[in-house]
Image (cartoon, rainbow, N blue to C red; front, side, top):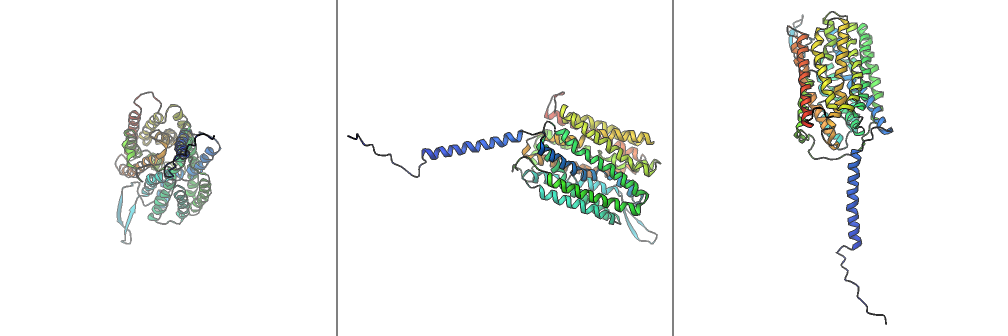
Length: 460
């Protein structure tokens, strides 16, 4: 009547049911989808929008307070040699003893060592800072660096002897800026790709206005050194504090942190030939890249130009460099970062060789404009160049590695230039050494670009 009754199949709770198997399969699909979405998001750069431009504004202020402060050393160098540390020689390598009138043994060290250490400290910590950024820890180092820069700037007017200045401006300001700089460059590369060169040029443009202001303050301080210099530094300290507070509040990364293999140092990034060649060219270029900015004011004074005028040559070079960074950024986006930086760096090398032969105000102004415009391409495009040499997952580590290599070059270059400054040729020998190093570096940039893309006219 009811037909044949079929018994239900045996149910084993340990075996997965069709529904459970379906859920597991669905979970696998969802995981793959999420991974695919993250990968797509990494390649989908906004290249604009409200959040991206807020990050640009944050870095705009941050570069004012870091690169601008460190790269203004040429103004401090000339001021210290004329006033506070006038007993020092221009030679960064010379450390010597002499007897005072009371028979006391004194140690004299060049004030230029301060700028050398400062330039190195802003770059050498970058490999650690870049790795911390990749794995998501960047706010604490950034805030600590901000506090250190502001504190040491306020302490500079209280410095009396050489090692005080070395501790505050050499190590304090240098390390503080070093905890921030790589993070700022990397955050920009997170938000921009097609317009990356322009974005980096914009954030470094503001830094040039800072340098002009520092030249103005210190030129005034030269006239009334006992009163104006301390308050010039305190005013700058307050400015730095306000700007760095804004930077800390607005700076942000776009993608979640990714723990790529390789540890803190991640030496495997040097396994790529193009990147390794670029590291070598960076080291050699930094042996001479900032030599002219360091010596242009002091050399002008040595050539008989008034210190009140010589202080402004650094400002002229830096104003021109701001324009050069913006233009080179636009050209880099259009023709390729490596292509543009090769040409601009070669021009900077030629200008450095020609600089010591300029002995009049118009000629020094002219060579300052040319050098500043050409050298501006380096910081504007280095982030773009490194960004093309790998994935965005470990971009912070690659930028950190390249900056650390640059820092080693920065600490080696000025002492060597100082040795040449004490030779018979003086600043002419400095120009030959620094300019030749930049030209060799420019050639190696082209080699690195050729290894990456072995086509003469290809955009890269």
